View 1: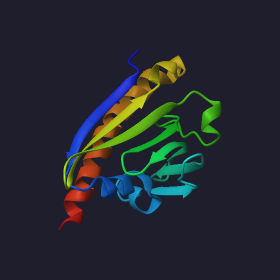
View 2: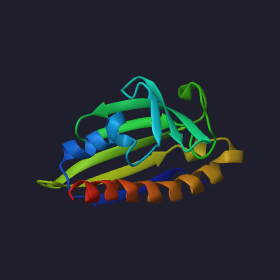
View 3: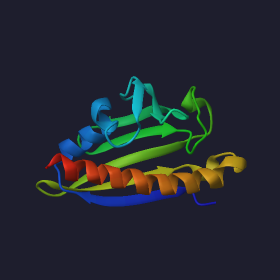
Length: 148
């Protein structure tokens, strides 16, 4: 069982702007979940909503402006609402590396699929692999449109 999803993209923006797009509730909802409720800060839990049917609790593991942000969640379309740390989950990490002023590499890593229950592991990996391709394209688009 594959344990990791890894994606890299380059964004023409400062590390601060990219971090804020990932780590602040007002901006993350412009490209990732449709809505966010709860406390979106390190050591707290929030809920991402994707449309009316899919909701997922997230536990914010780390927030290090302007280079690292990480959360834990139950992946895929499992609609888990509850204490994330009490059930098998994955870790989603965003690393931001400045390539030159105003241009950064964003690395997304999601790990922990091999530790999920066998009945959801493969499906969660497939869903999130496709999902991250879609969502990271939206993040890239967010910065492309922001400059217009």
